[in-house]
Amino acid sequence: MLQKIKERILAGGEITPDEALELAQKAIRSDLYAAADEIRKKFCNKTLDTCSIINARSGHCPENCKWCAQSAHHHTQIETYDAIPIHEAISIARLNEQQGIKRLSLVTSGRRIKASEIDYFCDIYRKMGEETHLHLCASMGLLKREELEKLKAAGVKRYHCNLETASSYFSELCTTHTIEQKKETIRTAQKLGMEICSGGIIGMGENMKQRIELAFELKELGVCSVPMNILNPIPGTPLEHMPPISDEEILVTIAIFRFILPRTFIRFAGGRARLSRETQKQALSAGVNGLLMGDMLTTLGSGVNEDKSLAREAGYDPL
Image (cartoon, rainbow, N blue to C red; front, side, top):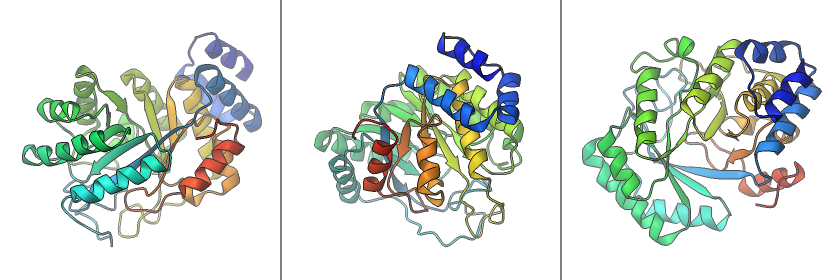
């Protein structure tokens, strides 16, 4: 079955949700990873897509997402501040470019940035555009058309809005906004000609069928980049005692996502720092072709030089 589905995808065909679930449950793991890597090599080049983020406004978020350290509903020990100073953001941007990272995003806490705040962040983006050659991205919540238009005019090419999990499971994790509101923001940004980065977090109590549901929702939206985050249980959040999923389950999920999204950048992101170097290298040979480098909002990420070495060992062109 695995060989038949792989050949179909390599020929331009698609996998069904039932087939994806059967592969996840029954396929020999090494064969599944190798097939996913073959699909990746067919549709994507050998250059790893790299990005980094700046935590541009931290904490005090009114939303009640169970996984998030920045929610005001939870009692965590994160640093909080309203907006990063422009000079600090530009300094971080220059450093990222010097390290060879291609993309950079400002990420702000909260349901959405206010109309009165958008001009300040647009000033940062314009300054970044003047002083670096970075591909600029933004992650600023459930924005409306007018805010997105301003970001695009300031040089932002890609908008990030994670679905986080499948529609059938989302309300178990957040009740202050809906996944449909996220999709509305994504569709609005797409209508303006912006690229879309949207993925989720695995290990929040969802099952494999729901992860596959998420992958097909992302496929339907036509996103170009899918961050694959692994839950990092934060003390003080409702998920702080969630048991970790196994390395095998992570790798299987990545491989299945590659079968469903053969041409998409699947980006290993938050939570991967807890994995061994060997498991991260396996992920790069099981469908992953992008990495979020540097710090991961409120948790420490992997070192850039270490990531570059890992990518080269996995057969990617030098970054």
